[in-house]
Length: 264
Image (cartoon, rainbow, N blue to C red):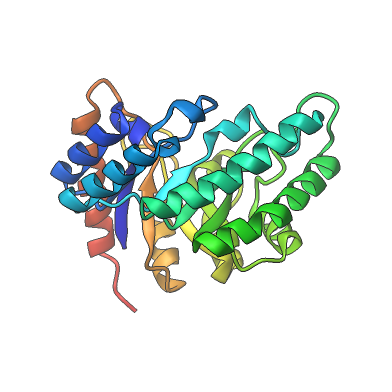
């Protein structure tokens, strides 16, 4: 498995994060696209080229991007204009992500806000996924719905419902093992349940460093190996007051856990 880290975990801008992650031995970084997306490097053609070049030069890929802006610009919003912006944002992200070599696009399943119930949120998300899936197919990327709080996609069953509703091979699951524990779900069982729908994984713990909290990281990694998973593990970890030291520790910890797992 390859191991990556979110740019925010290093507390660095995108370009510097690539360089620092590479120096630590990470395989990739995952940048976050906030509500200020139009000002970010991904929305500038010259910067997209420079991002791709920087990743190649440091042998540290940009395998995934997170559309964090959907927390403020949700496809489930009661405001139709906001929903339209969310759809266009996802379509643009698919095209731009492909230019920098990303394969997976994290879509947090965000709520619609006050007055929007879960059933309505689910249907609006399904409608949006159906509309944007062709953009992912054209770009050769995957939209990956993540189990996050406050939305309608907290469990494997809920993610599978969204994926089935989307009706596209370009819509898969981004599974967060730490979020699963927070929602009192069993990540080992849910990894098995997701099966081939699982495309990429977030690793986190409810402690400053991996292995010190309540997330059963060794059991989860064992479950992934048993399931034949061999793609990316992306760290969404506490930067602490020393992000580089924390990132180095976490990388060493997970590499050690993986090395101890018998390969099938």
